[in-house]
Length: 179
Image 1 (cartoon, one colour):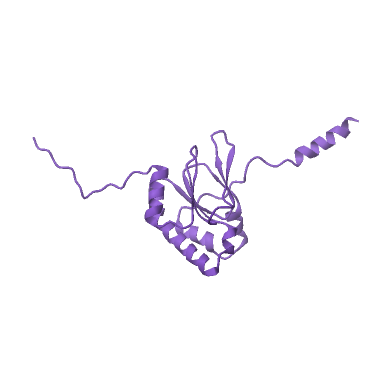
Image 2 (cartoon, helix red, strand yellow):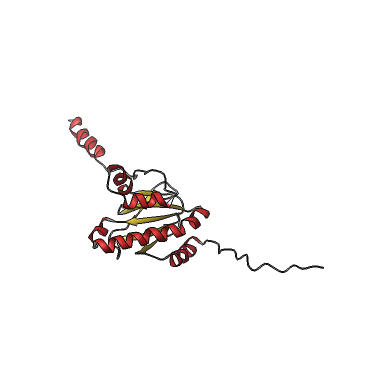
């Protein structure tokens, strides 16, 4: 009679969902790889990497292009893709200089690792544009930028969110004081 109770319990435990998302490959650092991954012809390696939800544990900019982007006209999608690539490349150096990772995804969900090693989900589906940027600094609320931002506007958003230092203006040297 006891085995009758243990069998359903064992089945229930075996079928429960996992609590942790799979960790994808290391974050991408160079924008050429980012562009190839977002817009390369479909193959199983790229599909697996981009569709696997990202787990973010450090300051990161996630460039996303969701499946809903496939509903755009071909010309609109190509123009948006080119602009997204171009403006991302313009700010990639500043991100690298400030230790901010740059990653790409086609997944609808991104996870932020919490200090207690649990994951907080950020759902990207249902936004006004199916592409854009997700700014994440673990421990603070995320910022979602949908659509294409030109490099000046994107840098303004990055400065505000990550509290980046202003560029040093070397043209104005402080006067020398001679006593």
